[in-house]
Structure formats: structure tokens, C-alpha cells
Image 1 (tube, rainbow, N blue to C red):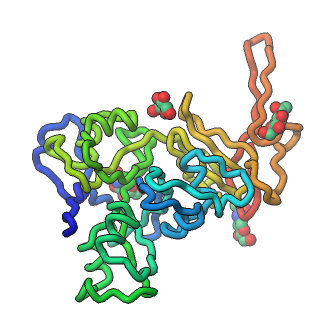
Image 2: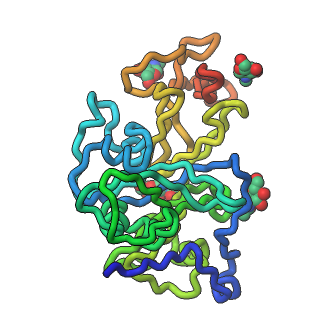
Length: 313
Ligand SMILES: *[C@@H]1O[C@H](CO)[C@@H](O)[C@H](O)[C@H]1NC(C)=O
Ligand SMILES: *[C@@H]1O[C@H](CO)[C@@H](O)[C@H](O)[C@H]1NC(C)=O
Ligand SMILES: *[C@@H]1O[C@H](CO)[C@@H](O)[C@H](O)[C@H]1NC(C)=O
Ligand SMILES: *[C@@H]1O[C@H](CO)[C@@H](O)[C@H](O)[C@H]1NC(C)=O
């Protein structure tokens, strides 16, 4: 029997609204259908899997997946690299707006012979979805009669809250509570506070159960790219990387500060020029000079990917 997972996202508690000094966030986040934002799914591997297999499970880019976890993505043949069972990954996904409320992303999964809805929900997707959700979304009448080879839509939870937490830039991680977890321990692990986690999830008290899904705000670096850039609004969680501009540029965030730092990526791809105009500096380079009025720093920064070209500033 599968334990029905309680999804705290969708429980709004009056108590939390009355108690906290901060305003509890609600999952009802106005958005328009063209909006999507970056969010992370906390995923534990159910078996040894190739990078490409994990990427395919969530329909994400292999390099982006490794970069989000600060795993070296510059080695050749990253797709065939084996990741060990039990490894916890942050999967970067575009969280889309559904019905004016930004709340979910879905992926497609092709059933294998021994799969059951419970094994897909709890094992393959490590509790990020439930048997009931898969059944409802796919209109399955008889869960005991699944056809191997047929494809299921798998709904997965995500939130964005306009990419801020108490007005500071943040990326939200959908985290499945494990046996032995407490809100205080999760808060310590992700450098946030128990109060913040309770506010974000509209919880009246800090009790949690294995299988609950919490949204955890992770501090992030924001970008100030060209408004017309395809990567305008890029947000990178502390302690991780993003790959952009057709794999030409890598941008890292933290750990020392929350200023986004972009350099040419170490991937073997062909890229347009990364040199700043009127200088011999390339993106990521800076020089400092002692002047009468103090220290003057000249830097060559990445400015966004516009119409297939790399902008510098
Ligand atoms: C998020 O942003 C949208 C549009 O930018 C705005 O309409 C909405 O009120 C914001 N939501 C919150 C919770 O601030
Ligand atoms: C970023 O993460 C590092 C640990 O990886 C931590 O020491 C630092 O305090 C974090 N920065 C912020 C602003 O949370
Ligand atoms: C400029 O950046 C490139 C690549 O990051 C590096 O190899 C080079 O040494 C840097 N040059 C200067 C002058 O800092
Ligand atoms: C990008 O290209 C389109 C069509 O080629 C053009 O209309 C637009 O102005 C370009 N945008 C920028 C920011 O250069």
C-alpha cells in the first residue's frame, strides 16, 4: 500500500497567517501562461543511472543538470557518466504557470514491464509525485492494468513566488521529506530558518511527515542582462552553476557572495567572440589599477545572449 503523500504546498493554514510576523506565502501566485521561472526539484536516484537517463526522466539538459549540482560538466561524454543510486540531485526545471497559478511542471514517462503506479511515484520519481496524482492526470481507471511501453504524464510540484524570499533573490527547491527529517534540520542544511520554511509552506506548526513536499527557498544570484536577451532574468542558486548562451558561458553563484560571475565555459563548443570592445579583456577578466582617487577596477562582463550573439559590457 502506498502512503498518500500529503502535499503541504496546497494546505493553507489560517494559523500560519495569524502567527508569523512575516506574511505567509500562498501557492496562489498570479502569473500569465507565457511566464515560466526557474525552480529546482530535489531528486534521489533510485538506481545507478547515466546522466542522460536522469536528464531524460525530467526532460532537462544534461549539462544544466550537472552544473546545477556543481558536478564537473566539462569532461568528455558526460551523458554516459554513471551517477550512483541514492545520490541527491537538484534538478533545474522551468516551472510553468497553470491556470493563472504558477505551480507545476510535468514530464513524460514510458512504462516498463514491472512498473506500478506506486513504483513510478515513490521510486522512479522519489516521491515527487503520488499515485493519485498520476492516476488523475492520466485518467487511469484500472491501475492494475498498465501497458508497458505506454507513456504517462507525471505532474511534479514547483513554486517560484516571483523568485524572491523576503524580497531577496531565491530559487525554490521542492523537497520530499524523509524519515528522521525535522524542519529545524532541513533549515540548517539549506542555510535558512525554520520560521521561513513554515511561512513559505503556510504551516501552522513544524510537524512534518515522510513524503510531505516542502518548498525550500535557496538564496540565489540575479543577473542584469539585456532585456531582450534569451537568458534575461537568469537566476542561479548559491553554490551552483548555470550554463547559458548555447553552452558557451557558465555563470556561478557563491559561496563567498551572491554576485553572479560568468566566464567562458570549458565546453568544447564554437562560440561568438567573448572579448569586450576596445580592450583585450575577455568575459570574466578584470584588471585593477591604483589611481590617485583609489583603486579602479575594469571588468569584462557577460551581458546576455541576444539573437544568437554574446553581449559583453
Ligand atoms: C508576481 O509578479 C506578477 C507579475 O509580475 C504580479 O502580478 C504578482 O502580483 C506577483 N506576485 C506576488 C506574490 O508578489
Ligand atoms: C552560500 O552557501 C555557502 C555554503 O555552500 C554558505 O557558507 C553561504 O553562507 C551561503 N550564502 C548565503 C548568502 O546564503
Ligand atoms: C582572462 O580569462 C581567461 C579565461 O577565463 C583566462 O584564461 C585569462 O588568463 C584571463 N586573462 C587575464 C588578463 O586575466
Ligand atoms: C533580433 O532579431 C530580430 C529579427 O532579426 C530583430 O527584429 C530584433 O531587433 C533583434 N533584437 C535585438 C535586440 O537586436
